[in-house]
Image (tube, rainbow, N blue to C red; front, side):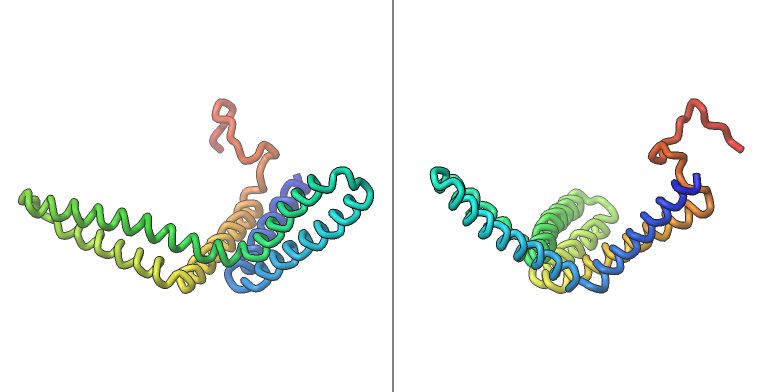
Length: 185
């Protein structure tokens, strides 16, 4: 039981540390992806040269595989920037669509003589404004999302530690409760 509790606490601490890194130390993640990308590129070049020297008959296959791995290495280097831009823009487009739909629904309710149509209209307009912020200020939005995700991870890690200390960790079954054998205390 102690090892399960210790493992759960270590997991909670790891989640908190990850949350801190994501929220407040984004350069660590960028540098990690950069190092991984450079490592993949260097490894690919060295391995391709060695493989071509050892098996020249497979030269074309080795070069094709090398090109694919070089692209993967380059993607690792640029991945944080791609994700940082794409997530707010795509999310903004989805939210804008929902906001515009709500505005049209409010307009149709207004034409139909329904009361409280303006609530849906205000909500739709607010969604459109949030969407415009996400689309056109995606860098700021990305930073805000990163901080929010990091804080959520820290809360989850803290709650994991709290529940393990308060309630004794899980019972080794992944947190699944057997309702047939459950007894209230």
